[in-house]
Image 1: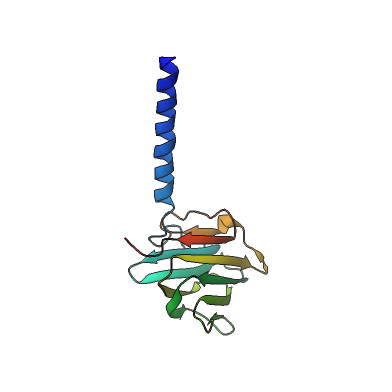
Image 2: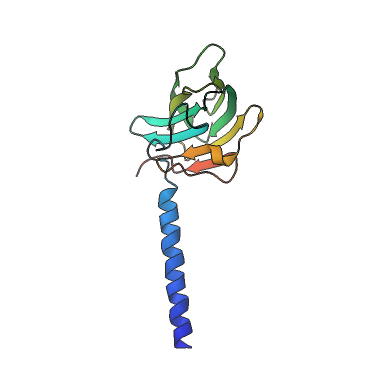
Length: 159
């Protein structure tokens, strides 16, 4: 019976430490390591000292990336990056929603932003008019993938 108790404790400690490691891997900090314009396809989301960032790239073929980002705060300092004719992002009058659409072909498209008084961001992401596969969404330096193409990020402010 004592061996079983020790085994249960060891397994519990392993599960708890794996959960802590997983939580650390779920950070939104840092540009995704795998972001290599023209060699990978998808969405890339991260935070650094300059704020929050969303970028799209492809393996050279045109794809239309579109979506909506919502916050319980207010978007500030929204600024497009490398947007071409026909690409756009729109900030709602209440500054709590960004709607966007980019055609990307090997380069980088996207925008930077900050969130004031917000605790969460809700993303709803599409490629070519369909929900994007979660394996093509990369978040933070480690490039972790959410469970769905509609997902929420919490704890937007650094401690």
